[in-house]
Image 1 (spheres, rainbow, N blue to C red):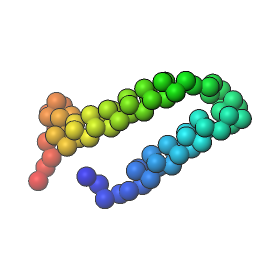
Image 2: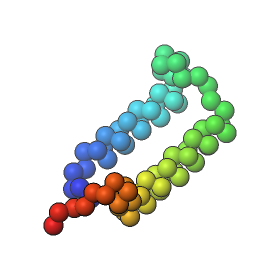
Image 3: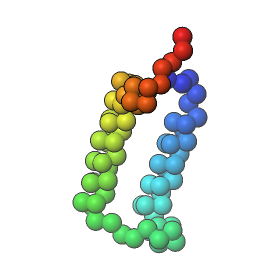
Length: 74
């Protein structure tokens, strides 16, 4: 894990901007985001939560490093 918090801050900032674009109708229409049913919003949120925990588990278990055969030098 890196001590650099900039990627996390960038991700949160981009999420906030996305939620503003998604929530404010004039801005959403400008960017071509159409009205969304609540079921679609809930499905997307659920998919994001599942994706987050899946990626977290992969990173913690170093599955990608094992799959690619990459070893850390000590």
